[in-house]
Image 1 (spheres, rainbow, N blue to C red):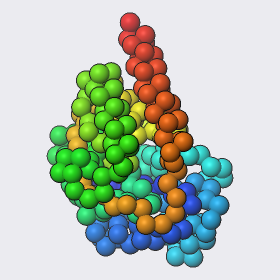
Image 2: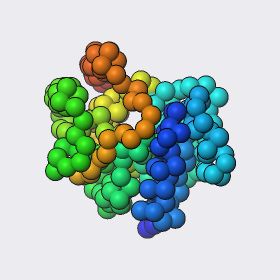
Image 3: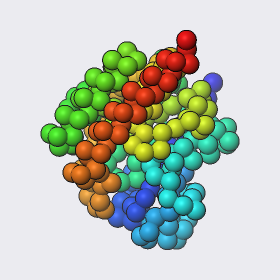
Length: 236
């Protein structure tokens, strides 16, 4: 059975990267259905999307990455898609790997598939400090739900309709990627990683600087533990 796929591209102030991202998708996935979720950008992102007649959604207030992606999941669900792919608008992801990302879902082997930088260790690997934080979160998630994922902060991932339904209703709003893995694991979802290469951001500014990295680790670690405790109480 043919499965319909939607690529969700969250974008906030990505005027330097968004067209390159869209061109990458169009060149490597001919005929792909995609939706850019413009998260109330304050730069020229919206103007570029409108002038280039790109398929996009305009949210009225800044929702953050979690709210932007959740908006895309709701759109995918309402329009009957079977698979939704998160593909960041900052130019760091490579659309050549999209077919690898969705293959385990199409074959019925997985519910969630994550594009991982750390299987072959090729391409941009992030800074040493961030890798240390990623390893910590990976270990914490494994302890909390038994799921081992190396690249827990990867924003390149695909989900089937069952997970899409859950995420359209319940999705972490602030730095959601690790929390989404834990939520999926606690649901009993089958989670796989596939090797991908990523690239360093060429334009614009990352939302995570040195100070926010500390906040990120504290906030995400606390949220993961609280989620596990909440689910544990609900299962008694």
